[in-house]
Image (cartoon, rainbow, N blue to C red):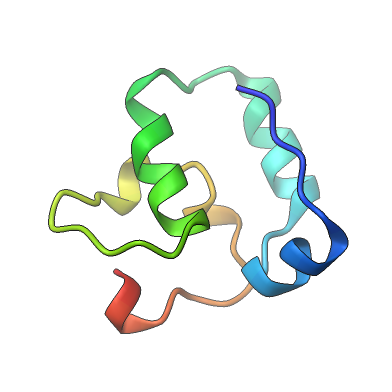
Length: 69
């Protein structure tokens, strides 16, 4: 999975990219992480969302709003 984000999106999503880069280097992601990660980036709500499968969750500098979880 390749990720590119504009500076505006980086600020809006409050993600620590050094943290994300470190996690990516560990190589512990699979296709199972894609949908859960994209749901929050696209600000979509779903009952199937699992923060443990969201690659961005542990690297956020601010928590997601409750209505997005």
